Every structure is written in C-alpha cells, then in structure tokens.
Amino acid sequence: SINKTKTKQFKKQDNIENQNISNNKLNRKQKNNEIYFKKNEELKKKQEEEDKKSAQRKAEIEQENKFRFNLLKQNLVLHLIKRDGNCLFSSISDQVYGTENHSSIVREKCMDFIEKNKLFYSQFIEGGEAQMSAYIQRKRKNGIWGDNLEIQALSEIYNRPIEIYKDVNKP
Image (cartoon, rainbow, N blue to C red; front, side, top):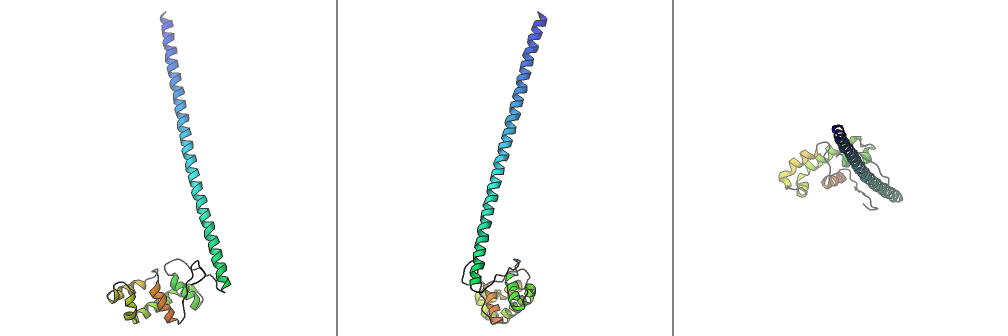
C-alpha cells in the first residue's frame, strides 16, 4: 500500500514534470516563432526600403539622362565636378583651363577681385561693408562654397556669361 502510494505520487510528479517540460517546449516554440516573425518583418521592411531607394535612384538616373539629352540638343555637355565645396571654382577652372585642377587659382582671382571692389560687392552680403573682410577671409578657404556673389565676380573677371543648368533646359 505504501509502494502504491509512492508510485502514485511518482506518477503524479512525473506527469507534472512532463507537463512542465511540454509547457517549456511550447514556450520555446512560441518564442522561436515570435523571433522568426519579428526577423521576417524586419527583413520585409528592409527590402521595402531598398526597393524604395532603388526606385528613387532609377528615377534620378532617368531624370539625369533626360537632362543630358536636353543639353545635347543645345550642343552642351554635362561635366561632372567633385562636390567638395570647391565645385564652382573647379567648374570655372575646367572651362577656362581645361582642367578642374586650377580651382585654387580661380578662387584666389575671384576673392582678390571682390576685395578690390568691396564697396560694390559689400551691398550684397549680410552686414554690408562691416562684414566684408570676414566674408572675403572665409571665402578664401578651400572647401567653402561659392555663391551668387562669386558667380558675378567670375563672370566679370573672365568677361563671360556664366549659365548654371540644373535639371531644366534653360539656365
């Protein structure tokens, strides 16, 4: 009778342990499924982002090709210039000297010209004449973008019109 009771207790305990093992296996399966579905969702999102970027890049390429074609119709050619803050000066160097390697010479000539004519050019910068020296000093630095003021000065220095095209047919 004691053996039967112990056997029943062991069977009960075995059943509880088996049930716990089954529950643990089920919990692990659920966790694995949750991890799988979460990773799957992340992969889907990543793929959607990549598809979107790919579609955007494709549209950009199509737009650039259309732009190039429209330039060709006007006997113009697109020259790619490094985007390093010197691009205005590099593009003028490319057109004047046949290479963008003389951008520092173009920048120097430009800023010397603006400095010589600072009374005129000062009316086009914030702070006017009081800020002109600081403006010129900053614009002399490599990698600082040229803007409308420098475009106008370069046009006067080289006695040529400067036309900038950007994704349209007209300057």
